[in-house]
Length: 43
Image 1 (cartoon, rainbow, N blue to C red):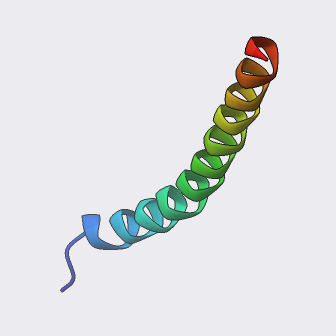
Image 2 (cartoon, rainbow, N blue to C red):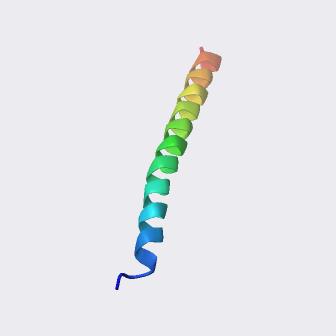
């Protein structure tokens, strides 16, 4: 008999890996945009 939390834990791990990657890429792109806009404002 399998542990009841195993399937949901695996699904949540996959969801975190997928959504976490999307969120991370969005945060990085947003950070780069703000960084470039900050540099552009300084120059």
